[in-house]
Amino acid sequence: NAGVTQTPKFQVLKTGQSMTLQCAQDMNHEYMSWYRQDPGMGLRLIHYSVGAGITDQGEVPNGYNVSRSTTEDFPLRLLSAAPSQTSVYFCASSTSLIQGWRTEAFFGQGTRLTVV
Amino acid sequence: QQPVQSPQAVILREGEDAVINCSSSKALYSVHWYRQKHGEAPVFLMILLKGGEQKGHEKISASFNEKKQQSSLYLTASQLSYSGTYFCGTVEGATNKLIFGTGTLLAVQP
Image (cartoon, rainbow over all chains, first blue to last red; front, side, top):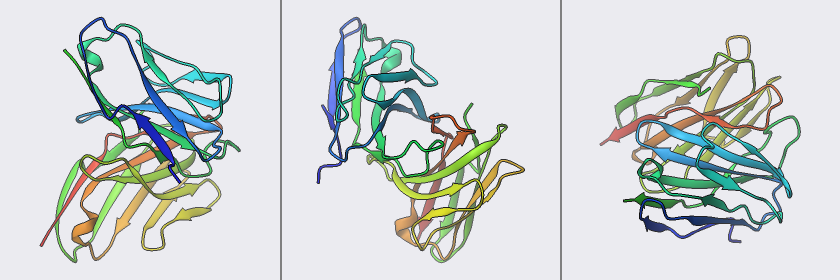
């Protein structure tokens, strides 16, 4: 059982480049989300999805795009990378949406992104 | 708005107890607790729901004061394996957003 899989694990980008961080889950979870983690700032919500075809913004959405064409996949796109986007990115999924978060979130192992 | 955690860091000796607090200015539907070890993903510890329901690991203890929008995580008889950063996550009302605090770094020494 793979759970939540993120690729790549590490990435170095030049300023202005674009890339897509991949996230896939095999648990048939409805809810998927992306967080970034920076020292001293905890986990901040970037975007989330409550099901295929439905996405919404989190706390820090600027500079990122998402789409959800299937239940399993939730890619995060950086359109034009900036040094401020250097961070560790975590994808998370959960099964239940009944009245907001009644079950645990499962996290991927993270993608460490450096923008130079 | 991120919930506020306190303390920011705590150092314990094995066998000592600790309490980590989490508070929000918003009415909460649920509070989550996760632990993250260095270089790893956060791992689920407990969910506390409005109305008193709790789900989580047997050895973890926590409380949720709905009126004050506060939660506390109780770590008793700490072990070296308890070391890591603890995050609380809160869900306001019936939103779909799980918002995390800035974390509490816990170090347990022999």
